[in-house]
Image 1 (cartoon, rainbow, N blue to C red):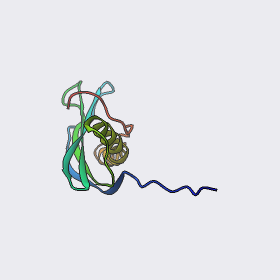
Image 2 (cartoon, rainbow, N blue to C red):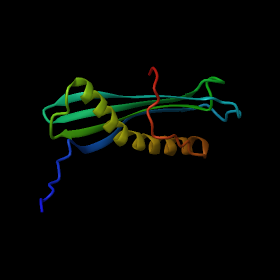
Image 3 (tube, helix red, strand yellow):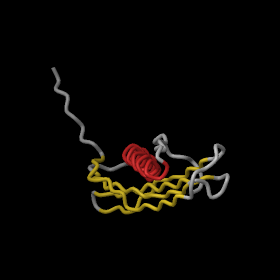
Image 4 (cartoon, rainbow, N blue to C red):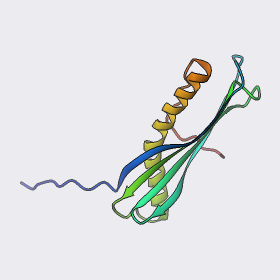
Length: 134
């Protein structure tokens, strides 16, 4: 019987850090406040064997302005890279997927915690990337 060998992970998470928070509470909103969420993941640095990804989140309200609060934050992840990640297009897609899996749950928890302190009810957003301009 052939023994199965575990393939090493291409990437290992070395740490996740909240690097920036800006929160402004404007007061209670009416029932019709429309939430706007923008986020994106970028490669911040890439050195031999290490990649740092940054998630930027912006949460505000489109109507009425300024809405009950505004919140922006940045979360970074340091990753150890153990093997090549393919060509540039494959690498970009792979890093966005890894970044989403690592960073979005963290930002969701931070957003819930901060909004709970601002409004007494936590805003719990799904951990997903919103496609659009940031």
